[in-house]
Length: 118
Length: 112
Image 1 (cartoon, helix red, strand yellow):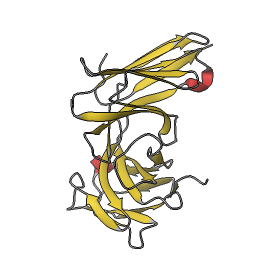
Image 2 (image 1 turned 180 degrees about the horizontal axis):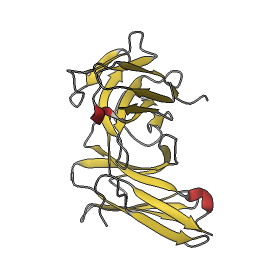
Image 3 (image 1 turned 135 degrees about the vertical axis):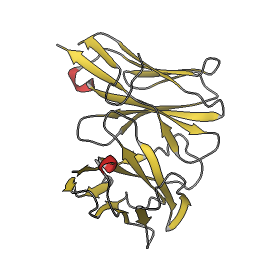
């Protein structure tokens, strides 16, 4: 099966500018996640979707970050305006099942978008 | 050792030796754990997982051990190969949820 697709691979912007990332999950996967990975750290969850609904956005900085999954398939993550500390890799992941994470239903990650804010 | 910011713990092993990567978790309600491998420029890749009702699970060249008493997880890689060089993360699912919380990661370097 095709993996999780993300674009662009790299993005360089100046602080206070806007940026958007796109994710196409594995076909049929109901659950989609956006993670932020700062250099040298583990991924940190930003937002989780179940189909086109938000399940958990408690760690999303909502004053500047937004995300949507309008048709329950592709998703976009936007930052407006960007700050220097937003420099990170933004990872999208998807999972087939809707329920509890368990064996045979792990998260599958894309290769991420590396954002540099100058 | 512990990592702060850019300083990932690093484990250097000789090719052919066995590697043991350790992870401590803090949430006693966590009931499912996964090890991921992340190569440079790529997303995390699933290696092996284990439920909290088990203490050991084996895969191909990899074994995960879980000690719930001390909240410790380890990944053992047998006959380590150059292709195993990567950052390894443990992740936990906290008590019936459907999202993963990741640890800091360990850089594995395989020396020829």
